[in-house]
Image (cartoon, rainbow, N blue to C red; front, side, top):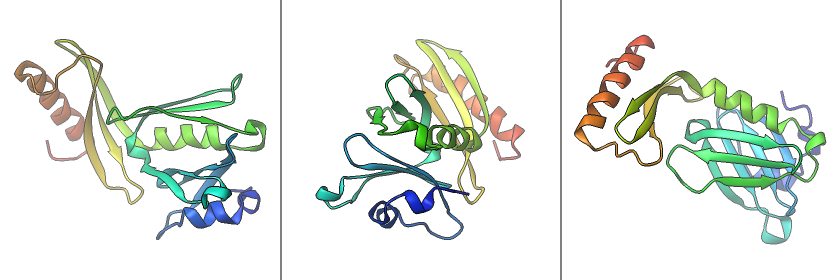
Length: 172
């Protein structure tokens, strides 16, 4: 599916090995000389060749909370479900890659069902996500200022999680 595979340099491909039915979907040169690579399972970054073209990050699509591409700045921003610092990637040639579209497609693909609920302190998004092998799991992503361990928050989140899991055929 990745029609530009031959154009992704061999060191970048080698740093992101695929396993089983995983496939390389898209890649892009970064302004700093490294690469970003999207597979059917993960988003990965690879350092510049003079840094050894080594894998610097590899996370599954289920770890991506949100992603956005700013074409004016050629910047791709990825927000993580675990509140790790945002990943900001400056693409060297955004016109020469399908990466922003592939990123969007993979994040959407990983979300089976999601519901946002109001809780004391803000909002929580409860989602059922899927892995490459089709395994489904649920996750609760708290908004800023929300304590998932507060009993009144936990009750709402647990009920919502049970509801979305049941709607997907998973045990509550």
